[in-house]
Image: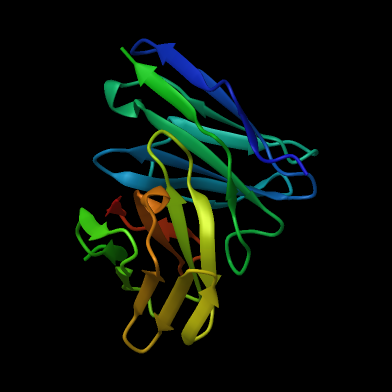
Length: 114
Length: 110
């Protein structure tokens, strides 16, 4: 079974731009979660989608948004990029969600904001 | 207080030794506990999960959970250089959110 895929793997943007990242979960998985990983803050939860609905949200500003499609693929968008948004963005999928279910991570998208 | 705290690293052990990684969490309603391993430049990969108090063994790895003490640990027996990585403790809290500790960097010296 194919794993979680994320595209693109690397991105370079400048401040003020916006970016869209994509995640395709493992076949059959309906929950997709997004995380931001930085050296200073570690892995931080952004949001979780299940069946096209945002079920949980972390403490990030409204510039960070996401959505999920009927095929469970998910996208996240960051608008008005700031230097501090430079990070590894990871998506993870699971059958039903984080609670009581194992999450499998994709390879990540490394975003650099100049 | 951080939701999930791990013992500060880096941790260095000789090959063949037991590596002990510790984690405490603050939310008493947490029910699911995971250990992930992350190699430099890679994404986290699941090592083990544990839901019930006690020990759970899988090969060279043993996870221990004590909900009364809000404590989770991971023991790696017969440590190998390939075990050198950052180990992340993750807890699903009462809000169904997976929260990670900052990680403990382990180095196994040949």
